[in-house]
Amino acid sequence: MPEAYRRPGMQEALESTTPLQRFVLLAVADLDAREDSGARSFDVREFCEAHAAELDGDPFGGGGVTRQAIIRALSALEAAGLLEENVGDQSPVGKGRPVYSLAGDSGVVLEALAGDDHVGPLAESVRASNE
Image (tube, rainbow, N blue to C red; front, top):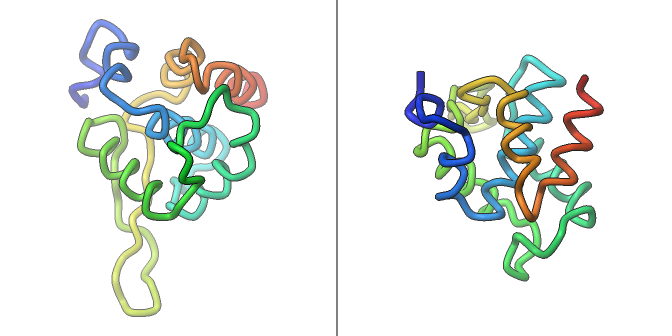
């Protein structure tokens, strides 16, 4: 089990993440709860663009939802043990596209995110819609 899930609570694992990373984690949790195929960066960006107006504050630091910011957030979350990266389908140039999934249960992640200042209300909404 990843390091983040061995700790007493998910809240501690989330304390070292940025608001944008928590928003991206919420997107992956939503996609993970609804589909078994995992989340690609463009799926995450779609979620973020669709729900950015529902957030308290601007987790993007004024830069909006950029592809690079989402890819950096996904990589950081994977390095922190909150996400797992797998190689998905191949791109037109023959490289595998990364597909991300939660390293643990989506319910645990959504519950922890529900207490967040930025994404909490949206996490509650996502949790309710996936039940």
